[in-house]
Image (tube, rainbow, N blue to C red):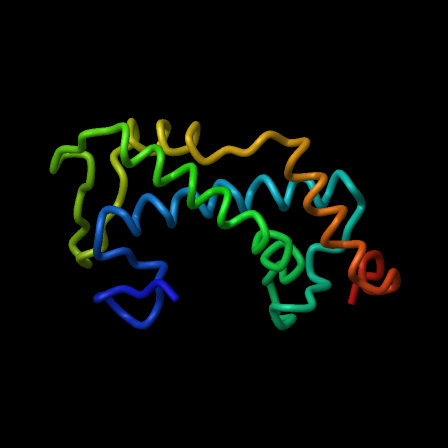
Length: 137
């Protein structure tokens, strides 16, 4: 599991690579959430992640099989770029963030074709009981 020297969560990146991964996973999260909505799936009906208020457990579940693909794309992105200190502003809280231009480049590197996202979600959803996929809590 990824960690951070700042706090107990991996959401507060203390290293540039983790800042890029956090952003890439946010891109994936958005793609999966949109695809789930377009496929009519209940974003809260997860099986790997526990249901909690305001937590789209199914979106988080459906992301898991696609994380290695995004990881590989980010490794490729990292290998093709030379970064500068200005690419990673550090907030007063010590969190490493992405400069907006780097965020746009990361978005392009991390975005998966929608056909792949929808196919993976359909495959993943096929393992869930039908009542959990469509009924809202």
